[in-house]
Image (cartoon, rainbow, N blue to C red):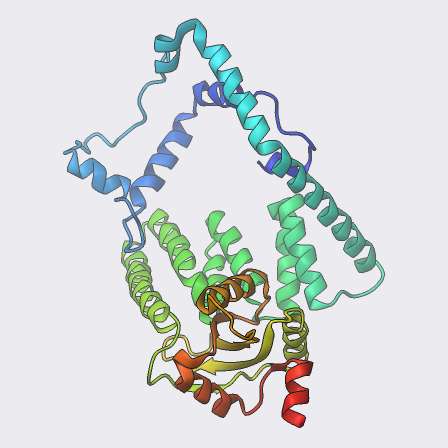
Length: 364
């Protein structure tokens, strides 16, 4: 699928090409490297299946001599059982694949070309004037996507020279270096994980794999334990952020005037909204990651029926369309949750949005 960055149409014979690639010989050193890497992986709490090592032990696989890949078969099962029908069946599968993927492929190609043009514009600008941090970051990540890893490394380091705590740049650079078995990647990943809880599981997994490859099992196990503890925290954080309940505490949202104005402008596009209150829920797990509650009062028509259904329809639309400043729970303020409405009003002091009609009624 990476070819969509460079060619407008999907390949004609992807499954035939795949069959040829799978039947190609693999260098013995490459085989052993893949096997060692697979056997170093351990099952984590978030995994849905056991790791290869546990599966082999369950099968009482003898590890002396060490496992190796089976000898390449001369005739595949497909060739044996499908015979002459294999080629036309493969071609039909490729035709169906083309029909399914063609539109998305071209969309990806168009998007890649737009990014390429933006990257070229940044390259031209960088040649005669300094880039902002955001521009430097875009240049680095687009270079990684469209050009290559080695070309992106100095650009990522340049971003971090400007902003040492840039989470995404630290994370990307750390992952690149770790994949190259460069220990310097650990420090970059640690910088990212310190500021972004969502990067901890993947970051610790990468460091764990690196340390195992280096034979530093004791250090690796510390990262395995860290990942397990973090997974437990993520579970608690998810429960804490699953809506709201009686006894929850709130605080003002703390958004900048610019972000608040952008949200107000979006809410103004929904004529059925009478007013809206936004607050930040006080959470114990990852308190630096805000969790917002957006309470919306809907205009109700005289003798309206199916109010609950229309309430849910509005919630669904807002959840799909609204660009919120962070993780946000959206609810309708009505007679069934008067206590919540009272709490939001008390905390927010004033609504983040109020329709012109409602403002007029209050003024009068």
